[in-house]
Amino acid sequence: MRFRRRFARFREAEVKGILENIGAKRLLSGQKGFGLIEVLIAVAILSIAATAFLGAISTSAIAINKQDRKITSEALAVSQINHTKSQAYQIAPASYPIIPSVPSNYAVTSNATAIVGKDGNIQLITVTVSRGGNTIYTLEDYKVNR
Image 1 (cartoon, one colour):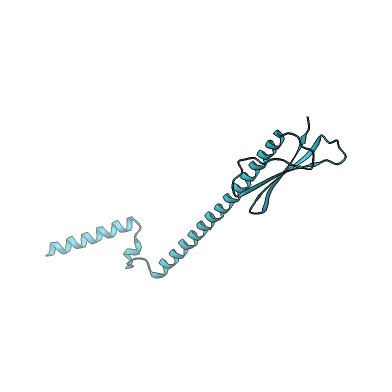
Image 2 (cartoon, helix red, strand yellow; image 1 turned 30 degrees about the vertical axis):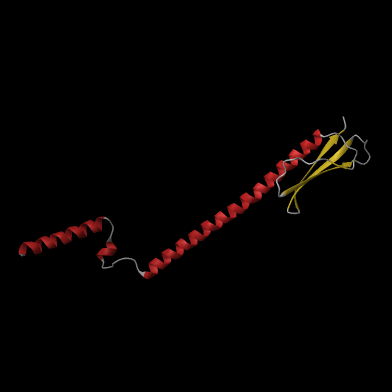
């Protein structure tokens, strides 16, 4: 019996020494774990971080969608200008044929206007790209009758 008590005290001292070495002083001072307030504060901090993260993802998705529309409309306008320049010269005011590969949710127009005070061999080409009835992008260039 005496041996068991000595061994138990030795074992208890050894465990305390190990716990002190790893920095577990809270367990040695009688605390059993985290309190309700500590857990609530940790959950609140995690909630704030998650909300900020989800807000950043949402903002990024909106920006990517907006940039995609802009790039698509610019590419359509440049393609239409090149297509218009490859067409036969028409006397202004005129409307040139539209490229065949316009996505279904976009509309493209290509109009030629005469330049006042110049000869009839040069015209201003205006290409307008719209989506849902709203003009997204307008591009102007010149076409010369050669």
